[in-house]
Length: 153
Length: 153
DNA sequence: CAGCATAATGAGAATGAGTCTGATTTGCAT
DNA sequence: ATGCAAATCAGACTCATTCTCATTATGCTG
Ligand SMILES: [Zn+2]
Ligand SMILES: [Zn+2]
Ligand SMILES: [Zn+2]
Ligand SMILES: [Zn+2]
Image (tube, rainbow over all chains, first blue to last red; front, side):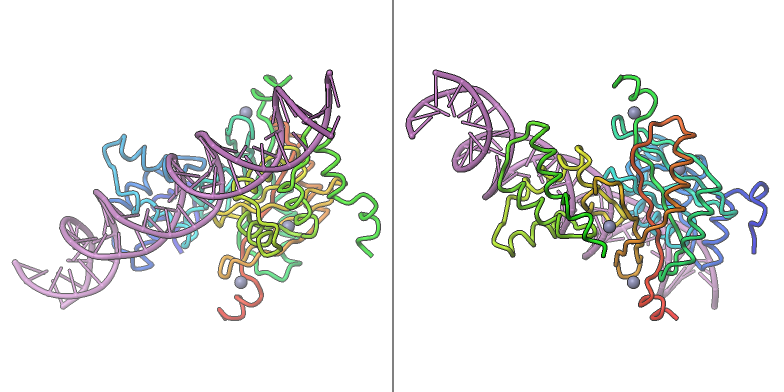
């Protein structure tokens, strides 16, 4: 099991190693997407990923972006997030399980991450009481960011 | 007996009253959608709403369904839920604040509601510590339903 | 009750995220 | 180096949701 030490092993390395172990070949589009996601702390839309790669002169086909994100999501290397704006977002899923959830400003659309250990515990606890085999979760808090709240007042 | 208390002021009555107070006129499409949602405990897609109304011989325009759901969502009479399947779902938002969250089977797509007071408390607590003015939240647990889990084993 | 201003509705076109297809390129084992 | 399967790509396609605008209905006013 590689990747027990997140600080030494970057998400990018861990991801490429996992893909190789699973028998996937390397490919330029996949490398480009993985490298881009590795630089981002919070979620990007497929469109944003596509645009940034193109801006970097590493443009890849739209279909490839989606296919790669789907594969990485299946392998739990990426987390897919849907905050209710009609577009999916994707961010790296760190191997140490460390993760955050999201605040969405329903006025301006801004998204911000937050973490809370107590919330994670509550989710884990309730997960064990359910008939489903829960293996992932999402929490989205909706509201108004400080800018929008001030503007409304 | 769950229903007895809530029946005094049904969601439907509360909703129609709120719309009237806010200065909206009455309309057939709106009544049909509100009555349908009032009969459902958990979330429906716009498509499902459209289909059911048509089956009841109360078909309304697709645009009206979406427009009405958007309005009800804005007025917090309906909660919009997005479990990451690319379609939005809608369910009544009860005035007493009583609500549930959702389990999604990523194999078969089944959705099931669950409630947990401890989880609600954890969310309220963390909400107060953030810079956003949080006024709503969603929790989605992903996993495998008992059928799909058995099938996989 | 008749007439008006305007809100509500509906049919269909338009949009846009995401998926599928079929052809071409590339990685990698032999 | 050769060959096959995996990876990539451009573009067509699907389908949920939104937009447009003509038509209908509601609630007032006189
Ligand atoms: Zn994030
Ligand atoms: Zn904002
Ligand atoms: Zn529900
Ligand atoms: Zn299932």
